[in-house]
Image (cartoon, rainbow, N blue to C red; front, side, top):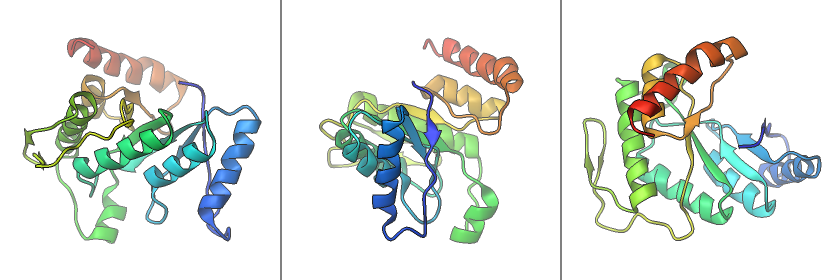
Length: 206
């Protein structure tokens, strides 16, 4: 994956999508080959990534990150595959475990067992992205749809997780394609994140 930049949005622009596409075109012209978009409570990051990637061919677009709460993995898979088809293979899905205080204020709910929810979320996504079908019954999620879940042109979808703790890193190494560390310096990456996620991937035969 090429080195990328986070694309800051301009909420005061007359049209935030048009402004983001213009920023992305300028970045691509300047040599940037990967941009990342953050999910908040306004613009939907997966939708915007699809629009930007379709408008700027060749530019890698990804989310950094979309919290798994309160999103069901079936809906995330649908959006991610659609974005991948729209960008012709240039979309990367970045997920996060969420943040309790902002989510509780916004939704009035606190989701327990974040690492367990992450594991089940990734299990559903892997089944859909790799097998084109899913029949999953877990503690946090059930995914057994009657209708098809495969999107033509929408696979594969690389999945990265903003994992920092050892449990989340182990799940990421087992089930995802990589991590998106936040505010981690070279020492933390080299001495903790890389060894932990690499060992988990090896233990899973990956």
